[in-house]
Length: 203
Image 1 (cartoon, helix red, strand yellow):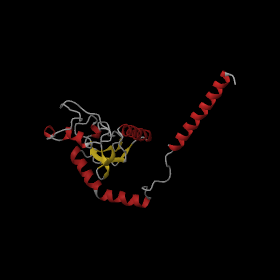
Image 2 (cartoon, one colour):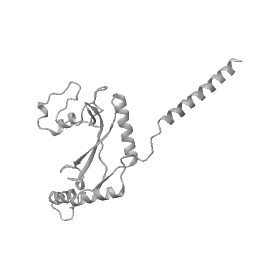
Image 3 (cartoon, one colour):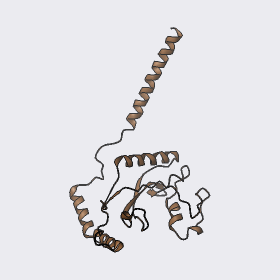
Image 4 (cartoon, one colour):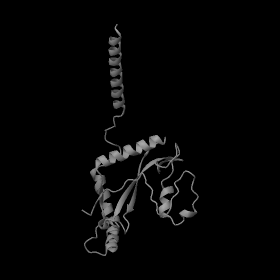
């Protein structure tokens, strides 16, 4: 066989091999699209919404009225919207960070929060919000919120280690490990937390 034919034959085999590998990898990454076991029925949903309406919602609306001092703005936020692409990108981002740090991503922990009184958007001030954080195994727990951005390889750090630098009055007295960022009072710090969804109300 002539050298040029040998080269063509070799390249053809290589292309086929790469194509097969790509196809196999693609099949391995297919997400399970069966009905999740933690989905609920409408009867369950109705019962949960009802309990919220006769309990927490009354308390939160009363707080909202006192917070604003207004007769119009008295309904606390009841839902939060995030675009599906935002959620997919966020999960992909967490998976990438966790893989780089060799830390198993076990899920998301979702915290209730509220926008502060000095928030730039006046309509959101004091309103209920959500903060998403990645979770992993720490000790005997499989659902601990952690910060992959600043964790060491195989060594997850609880996100509260960083949160406390901004929320606790005693943070200056806390001994920090050498690999934690050292901050001044004027600095901010990026996190792996997700927020900034669309709340309703306000509409």
